Image 1 (cartoon, rainbow, N blue to C red):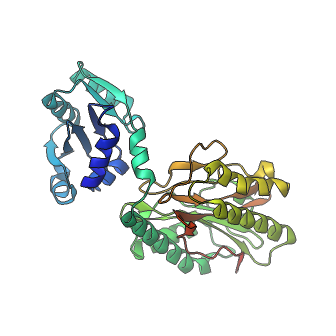
Image 2: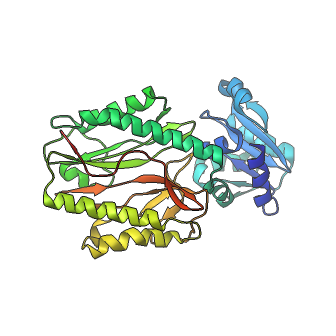
Image 3: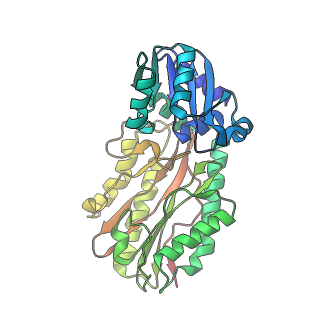
Amino acid sequence: MKKRITKLWQLVGREIEAMLITSPENIRYLCGFSGSEGSIFFARQEGFFLTDGRYTTQAREEVKGLDVITYKEKIKGIAGIIKKMRVRSVGFEAHAVTVALLKELEKEIPAVVLQPYSDKLDQLRIIKDTSEITILKKAAHIAGQSLMQVMPLIKPGVREIEIAAELEYRIRKNGGDGPSFPFIVASGARAALPHGTASQKKIAAGDFVVVDYGAIYGGYASDETCTFIIGRPTRKQEQIYRIVREAQKRALYALKPGQSLKKVDEAARLYIEKQGYKKYFKHGTGHGIGLAVHEPPRISLLSKDTALEGMVVTIEPGIYLPGWGGVRIEDTAVVTRHGAEVITETNKALTVLA
């Protein structure tokens, strides 16, 4: 943890006098705290972790590299340490501070300039170290193992919501901390909804069933999507699946250190376009993953990022045909010096169930 804090100061020390960190992901990354209430304050090479009395024991056990301070009231506690350190300006994470919290702080410390500042933290977390990659692989293994156990239940007459519930149960039973997001289980025409969360719909013969799921393990998320077919596929279903699978293979092949992530997106997108389905691929090809299930970098036509060794990203092209159904195939991969190393474990060949 000390190395991460030192690296943060190397990045921001000349640009900002002090920093308030409130997002759970960045707090865990910098000091190891896994609870739901806490803040980190850095100033002049000194660091403090602030929380309330409910988490005093947990903070003293988990927090590394920072002095632990317990407060009775959050705003006064944060304002108190800022006053004590006599700083004139404090950077904060714009995405993690509410307007209400900001206004209350401004009332308590009117002489201090509060300014949004979080880009450097994104840069810190974008490259995973070996310990993080080990945890991410474990999360992916737990998720894949759980899906294999649930696959026999994916059959006609079973509701989508039942599949999601059983999958979450299996993830916890297999050692995961829980689901990394609300699972998508979308069958039949609902498979054309890129974010079709599990519903009361019953799975039917002939359906595509899209299952987008993941596990949390050690604070880190996995993310994977499998599309199954219930019964013998039609020629069109086989064709759509084959196109999406080939698009994914091309993007994974393109994912190498130094490659533009826009080009990685294009590797999948242009293939789908050539097959006549351009307007039916409605989202980016992938995203970074780590302590958050969606984090930088983005793999899309708008991306300005370059693939770097140590990045962990998803590759997830899809085709969605309204009223008919859809296919998405997603794997998580580590960018290595040799290219993409897929760490999700489920076979992506078209799998016929029931």
